[in-house]
Amino acid sequence: MDDDGMPVPLDQKLSGEHTLRAVMYPKIGTTERFDAAEATPCEFEGEPVQTEPTRIDFERISEGTPSAS
Image (cartoon, rainbow, N blue to C red; front, top):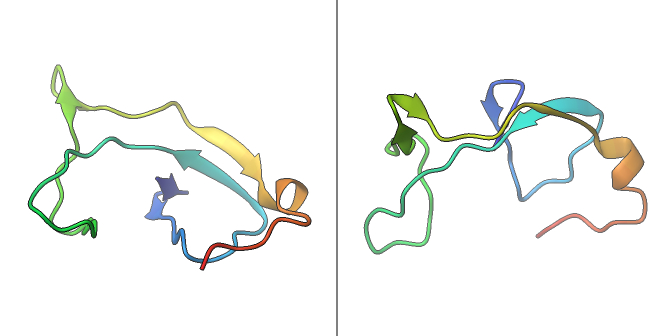
């Protein structure tokens, strides 16, 4: 996913409002760790496979939700 054009750190609690878009990447290699610098998005008709942008207010949805660790 990207947040306002930047990768989202999924190991940290998010706050504020952000526009998110999920981009699909193929699994490459045997490691479970994703490296955005080495990855190339999946494409369909020359365009990245991705969701439409969605605006999310993380303050509203994260109340009482523990952060991932």
